[in-house]
Amino acid sequence: MKTNAGILGCWNSGMSEIAISGGLENIREQGSEAGSLMPEIRGQGSAVGSQRTDVGARVWVMGERINSGKDLKIYQKAYALALEIFRIRKLWPPEEKFSLMDQIRRSSRSVCANLREAGAKRKYPAHFVSKLTDADGENAGTDTRLDFAKDCGYISLEEHIRLTSDCKEIGAMLGTMLAKPGVFLLKGRDRGWKAESRGQKMSEL
Image 1 (cartoon, rainbow, N blue to C red):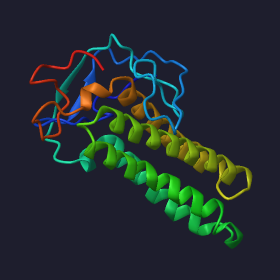
Image 2 (image 1 turned 180 degrees about the horizontal axis):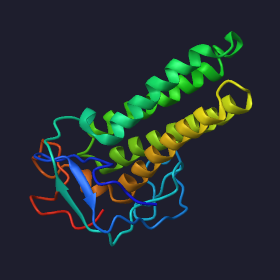
Image 3 (image 1 turned 180 degrees about the vertical axis):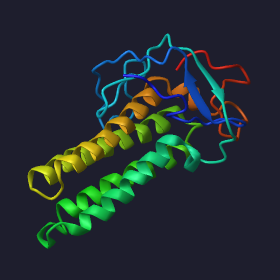
Image 4 (image 1 turned 90 degrees about the vertical axis):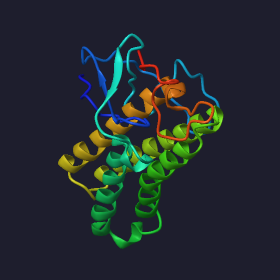
């Protein structure tokens, strides 16, 4: 599986996109638990996506300015998925209103909310990782509820494949961030969206 340049986006005071040289990822089956406040950082993968960037992959920053968490590629993808789920779930039977419909709406939106909260807590490593882990758990919950929606006949096989593929991509991005959270943390008096350590180029993610 290839990683598209700029697929993750980054917190950076001057530039936005991350590119990974070589384009290939080392795919690993590693899970993250939603409730964990301080997971094992270096071995952490994603509950959905089951992959993280190989430690040896070279990474650099390029592109346009990131002004807030809303500019992150992962946030934009999660937000678009939540809107799409909100649209299709209106067609589901009324008896699911307070069960599957409510649950999948909540979990898909919670991914976005936890990403924004993680961005606001980048000075505090444990809190930052906790919010990313919560986002990963909510994304896994959304993926599971899409399985139920398909098997109950509420969405087509094609819709299920498309939506769960988005969940897997979001999970892969979260796995990358959880594998190297220090890259995204604020240092000292830094206040911008920064993905470089004290002005030095990131060498790996």
